[in-house]
Length: 153
Image (tube, rainbow, N blue to C red; front, side, top):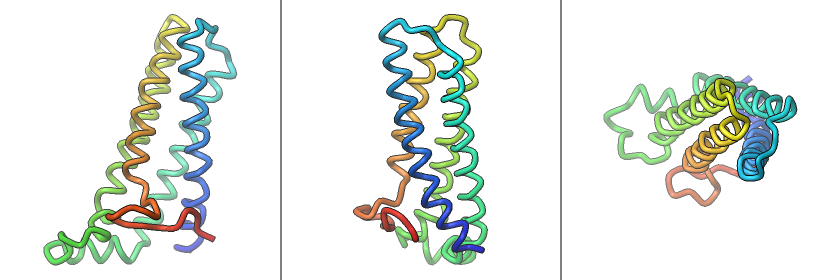
């Protein structure tokens, strides 16, 4: 079951990143162009948030099944200096949960705005912050903290 969750988590991250980047670009363009905030724009924000929630759920399932995370929490004093165990046992999960929270805040705060430009601006600002957080906490293949492949098969 762990391998299934890990593989799904690996694939969904790319879907989420694509949705997030696309929605952020559209929000910026809508904000700067004075475009009307349409139902399609609302839908795009909603589905970006939904993919973020699914990804977080998959990440939690991977986390609770992960031998590395279990090892980290069982041996906290010994592994505190092990960058890979610390990254996956603590930083990755906290960072990604923060990013998903920011995405949820983006969608919620955008809905509460009265003016279309304010809706686009809120989506853009919060989604951009979420992208930055996500990019920091992804275990890139070139990361010195914890490298993982581009995609798991």
